[in-house]
Length: 342
Image (cartoon, rainbow, N blue to C red; front, side, top):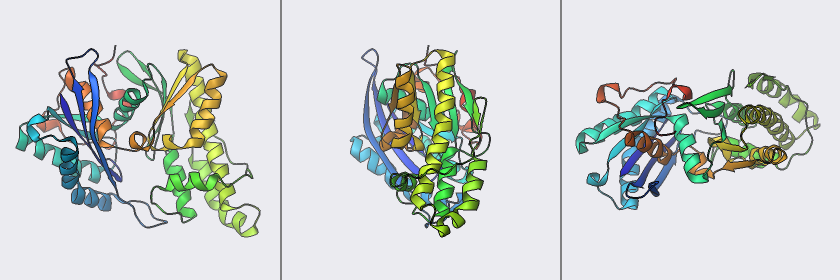
């Protein structure tokens, strides 16, 4: 059984092919292709929905061709076409969904609309082998602490305003850092050169976190701090990372204690950050626990995660009728019925 996955909820356009060999128990999973193309706006700017959607429309057909060539398959080999239904940016989402519908009609294939967040979780579980972890989902659009219970991925805590990735990306614009390969990655590299910690607002409210205050503070004060020579850009990046990551470690540890888990799975684009992984590992080791994380092939938005979550749902008999293949910018993780897990 082979699934084609199409992801385009933000500035990353991904196409993936995954094969589940149903003759074995559990099925043997093989990644056939995992191709991505990223829209990079100029330094100091964010990506706008209309420009991102145009990027996706311009590149998706070639990516599908390249993925099928890499996987050495033809349309007749594909069992199901999976696409991101949400959450995400409206224009990019609908651009990719239109292609998914078109291919399904041309090739006479079933469709499965996938929750973007669940795609991250299922790909993370598949790659790392984590059994029942507390999931920290951190990206440019989402920040959630999640655990599985009774056929749902339950949200224990989340960002009350902006996501942690958005916080880092927006500070990168203040420093006029490049968007290639990613603003958050460039923040991480600069932070490695910093050592002087600036006291920043730290906002944890129960299991939830807030990043708008720390962003406003550092955005407002950065020009004067840099001009005075008291702090370098590297020091400010270091301070911002240390503060926001400490907030995430605190809430994740509390979720581990609540459900009695010793596993943490970090997913989403910010999950590539080595400092976040290191801080989380220090906490987990004190609890005799373990941290699971993937590299940029699977942390950053990709098509293979959509294929993985979609094929799992498809194996339970789930499909998305053509008339319900609309996209939604707001699609919470806990809205998905996880029929494939016990």
